[in-house]
Length: 285
Image (cartoon, rainbow, N blue to C red; front, side):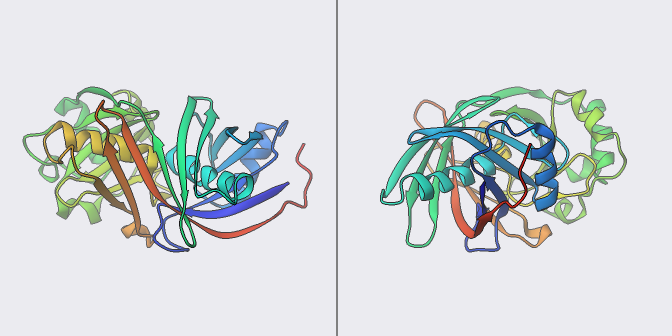
């Protein structure tokens, strides 16, 4: 079996969010996929099977669990499909069949990388979060009410994974840090899987695993909800691309671009750069 190491939402190799893409993974067990993700020490890995000229079945793992959907693995996998299945084509479209459902992705070959775009569909907007529910979550992030932007509420928004979008002042961004072990429980209480700390003026985002052990450097599944949040509160122009930066605090600057089409779908795009590829010596069972 072959694998590819790529950087997604990058501006050059060794920026953006690293990803391992495994091919020919039919009949691999979940425990093997989980183990290989930990072995590669990436935030996520994606495993492709039933590869065809139109797409592939896919499963995504973090070091802790399988996810029904995630953004940067989808784009990275599509770039690898373009490279391996249609190397002579300038532009392709793919469908990745995830547990969440089918996700269409477009890829375009550049000189030395790929530009990839996925349609995350129309976002699901939750209600604003009441102060008494938000307060313990802020505490778990080392923040307080004075760090939030007045006049707009934190809100759960999903395009596949539900994120609590937490609007904060620029001064709060460097101080945000998860403490304690019950954040996942607190987020579950408001219907969210993860929290996204968002500087709405600078359009910069931060998110972590719920124990705060790893900061994600570019989160495609959160970029759509972040853009939807900015649009909802009139903080972004629906006719212009919305550029969200991430990864500065983890030393891996990343750039994610979101466009809303004329029916409300969110199109999330970024560059994918190849770092290496290889052959797996072990035989997965």
